[in-house]
Each structure stands twice: as structure tokens, then as C-alpha cells.
Image (tube, rainbow, N blue to C red):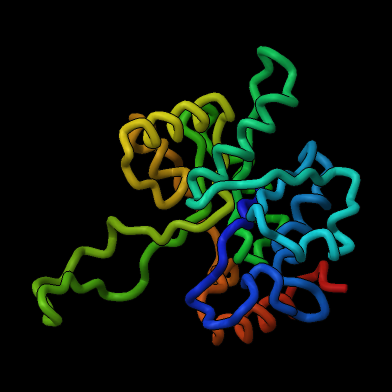
Length: 227
């Protein structure tokens, strides 16, 4: 599932960042492509903003294994909407696992998605992530308060992989408590699970600022699936 209902305000452009051009395609098309190409994935749900007018213009919109649904104002609301659709279309009693991937991560590789599938915990799930390499400083009023032991810290990426029923319950519980969840793993953590960290790659960047587009172009040029 790809939540793509955000506006990307930090890009400083008028249109949502997932539709910005990137090597001849919309950024979103690159983010979705690996999941449509992997035959073991049953289908892809793209969660759109209610006022989205751009997705239907993409060739991607006509793919037979892709479904869309309208999301909410926050990421967690959009993910919940997508998960509810998957649950509705799943066979009753079947154990379903879902991948949730950022619409703004166009450079994820097939190999990383399959490694996540193979290494994620059956119960606790997992996520692509990278150990922090830089020295970390905790700040206080614009000054260094202390140097933090980086050995314990990882940078979370997507996709993240969890059992559908457990992730649905975790996100619904977080919504009922009105607690913030910044990714699916944080909802699972709040519910008492310990998702497995599966090492990702530096190339799996999240396009957040204008300069990130050039970096994404560089990494895409290295991908074997580039057409």
C-alpha cells in the first residue's frame, strides 16, 4: 500500500510532490513500480487525497493490479483507509501481510523489498532501516547538551511489513488514544510489538526538499530496472 494523500509542503511547489517529474515519469510512478513488478505481491492500493486530480492522468492508473481509495488528513488515517480496503477484499480468516511504502521514496529496489519479506518477523513484522553513521548530538536551546551513543539508533525507512490484522488493531488503538504515530512501526511499538530492523540502503531516500530530486535521479540511474 502506498499512502499518497499528502501535499509535500516542504518542497515549496504548488503541486503535490508525488506528481513532480522524475526521469520521464511522475515520482509516484517510480515508488509504485517495484511492487507491481513483484509477482508475489497480490496487488497495490494507492491512497489518494479527496481532491486529487492528477493520479487518473497517469498510465499507472489503468494497471489491473492497482486499486485506489480516498485517504484522510493525516498519514495514519490514510493508512487505515487502505488497510480497511485490503481487509474487506481478503478471504475471511486468511493471514494477510501488508507492505506500506512512502509515496516519496522512488528508489527502493526489488532486492530490498524481498529481503524485508524474508527477514521480517511473522508476529512483530519489520521495516527497512539504516544504522546511524553520524555522531549524534542532543540539543538544548541551540547548543549541544550531550553526545548520544549512535550504536543504538537506526533511521527508519519504508516499506514496512506487518500482519494486516495486527497493524489494523495497532493503528485503531493509537487513534482511540489520540497518540501520534509517525510510521506504522511506531503504532506497532505502542501496541507492544518489537518490529525487526532489516538493513536497507542509502539509495532508498525520501524526497522531502527540492535538492532531493537530483539525488533521486542519480540513484534511479543506477537501478537495473530503469527503462
